[in-house]
Image (cartoon, rainbow, N blue to C red):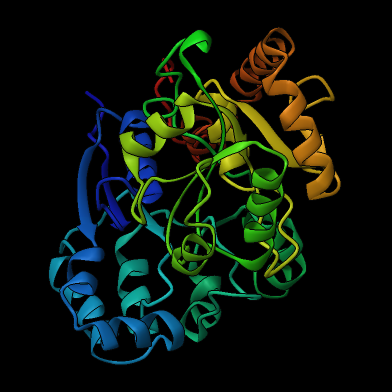
Length: 347
């Protein structure tokens, strides 16, 4: 009789987060394993706001100490076959070394930048201890390669989740609008303003939009979904829109984002700037490609008045993302199978 695998997921398990979706995908991949979870958001979210800010920006202070104590107190005493650490930027070296001793196989995953932003002196000192280090940021490969041997490094795409991101309404029931859910940035304000000025209705959501909303408060074509749009709410809003804005950040040279896959997976037309990474998945008839916001606005205004063309583009994008394998289940398989784990065949 085959021995039951013993596995641990260490990361944020808060409902509505992408890390929670990844942990669920891991458990689907190894359903016969005995899984333990350590939710690092429990000690973090219970800390005072100032300590959370220091932990987020400097990896310092009582919140960081609380996270490490919480993890160390909950680590099992017996060895484990797999430990998956998700975005463990606040883990002290002593904590990672303790985890390393327990794990036959130790994996680190991050969908974020690790050096340009979200840097962590703790991670830099411990990254060599992992058996696999998984990143979605090709622009940081050089930095990773300074610290990790090539056979340990896995570059993957961002990913959508098949259990969450799927069409919620028919094309005929969609709202004639563009939607963007995410952090407000100057370029994103410029994009939304350009669409509104072209007569396109826009629905936005996420943090930091208060000033923009005040300036455009008389615009009848602007709708605000709230500053916290997650989980089913997020997928529902994407699915009901005619066009989803897959805007990347301008804080660094991001080439694609989770929205790149979540929007078409929800059955909505993707509007995106072209890049080497996007063009590997989507062709000219699969998405609305633009170079300038004026170009984007003109295309959106025209397509909303041409529902047959928009429907065809939407359906092509949806089929393309389904065929891409750029989902959480596919990512987990990509990481685990080369390590010798027998991943469930029905993923």
